[in-house]
Image (cartoon, rainbow, N blue to C red; front, side, top):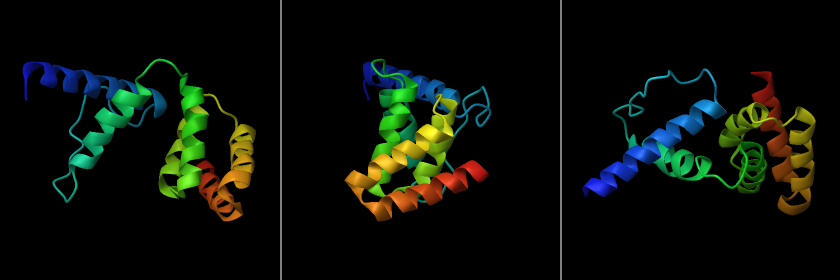
Amino acid sequence: MSDRSVEEATDLRAAGWKAMRAALPGVFPEQDIDLRDGRLGEDLVDIGLTSVWGALWGREGLAPRDRSLVTLGILIALGAETELKTHVRIALTNGLTQDEIAEVIYHSSGYTGFPRAVAARTAAREALES
């Protein structure tokens, strides 16, 4: 890996930590930690830290609130309820209200189908109850 590649990876990691801490206040300590656990696929979390949180959530161009709206819609369309639970909590941190989250679910039913909307509602309820 070139010096520039190492520097870019370091920058994305720092941007990823900053974005994750902002989205999930109090979940991660202020000092960077090793997210690997020594088990199969352990690098997936690190890939998410740099590529999703650093390269995407760390970008300018959309406010965190807007990114949450987009992310909720995508996760509902994918049927990704586990991720949706986390992103419901992130959406609240980013300024969405529970009523607005419900509207995203209602709106998605017309595009993703009623079963996906019901699954999203169940996941959102579980996230809000925890």
